[in-house]
Image (cartoon, rainbow, N blue to C red; front, side, top):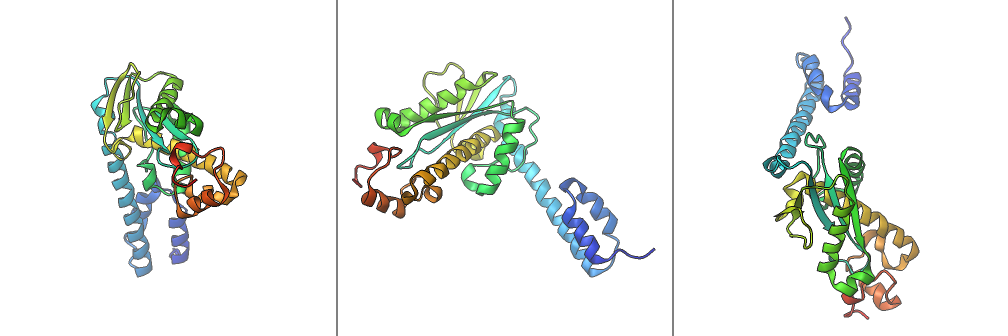
Length: 253
């Protein structure tokens, strides 16, 4: 039987899924051609990275497993406390107890493309996923911390089913009756909080990209409302927009 050409084996490796890697390795590990052995080594490295990610994800379920006696555990996180413009957005996510979503992490540690990909998977697989959003005018009225709590309460209040435990990124949210567990750097330690951080960031980033089309001078698509040099220069030159937080920009106008 004629040996399969190395180019064809390479194309096969490029086309297979993660779960087919073991079959590929077993099929070609006895092929002594150096080119094939390089492909087998590449497959093994890819498989090792996948297994390491499974282990990392299992570690991210530490708090969910610790509180497994609760029926519905929601992770809560926010994005947008620091920007000069745009809303603060909170995410609340209840994941299934057998959640198989890989690569969830603190949203800031992920590329925009990976966040978008995970957003779709989270929204598809979550038991419930909701958002809360507080606009700049309200932020100016009650301050950013209270606005953050309000966004979080909005997100939690929309969840169906309602959670009986909240895992929060660092804070305890006032005026909620269910048990809360604040976790420092929770978006990198809890799969539920990480999922909440991803849906909140993707939502807010999309919104700021829409605002960039309306107010193109301020660079919202790239700075997302944060105080970049370009953004501050635009405020000084053109003045604030309706989405600027007046309580944040007193030094620039």
